[in-house]
Length: 352
Image (cartoon, rainbow, N blue to C red):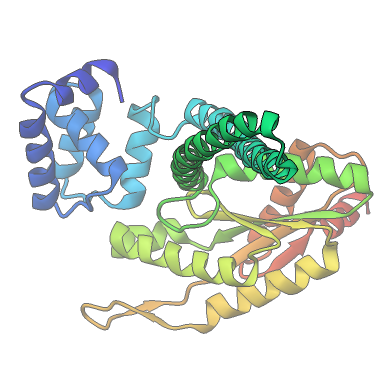
């Protein structure tokens, strides 16, 4: 969020701005998510901004501000979006620092316990000698031991509380990172996380000599469907297809929303045969369900998907792998949609 807007929210007028944002969101049936709140705060504070002009244009045209519309607005008009890469990097660095501090605290706690035990043992040993000359030493040492024990107990309590707080901070940072790596509409991995994980998986495959297969999936005729039934129904279709992809193509695979109505699946340590089986299961399940509009029970028609996939060549770059999978998807579209195509078959046809 820009510094001037942050300053406005921290000023005495901050509550009024926040209240106005929530009221106008409610009036236009916009969900009160963090991203939407940021958009509408910008809209109120910067009344003549490009963002405000675009929102006014959409409202005047009778458009509904759905989650996908909000995503597009944020991507275009909020370059300093919440949970950007800088925040993630800072969060990672802080998380590592917290782990180091936690280990130091645990080491100090063990040392203090051992010190107290050693002093206690020494006092018992001196008392057992029962020597007159050592009596004073025993008493002094016993007093010192009791004092150290008390101090240790206080320190241990403080360390335990600090350690618990560090644990809560780490959990918060982990949640921030999960949110930043998740697509808000479909709950699948988002594009940024997909790009990172694809690079990591390919690097690991090079080290271990493993296969990697990449698939790209597209909802057939989604634009026409969206234009016919509206963005809200379009969002429901995206969620439905994403739920099938996430269930059948989820962990240990990586299922992501690649952009718009496109999805992607990374298959670590799996080849073309496994990918084909999963993609056909997804395609058949998506097309098998008759979707209806809940409010009117209208038949929305068939939903189908096309897919293309490529098994990675030895040492192949991620860019080349994505291009070959995308070419296979294009071949599926060109051949009539609602089908799955392997990049290898596309290459074979091209070579013939």
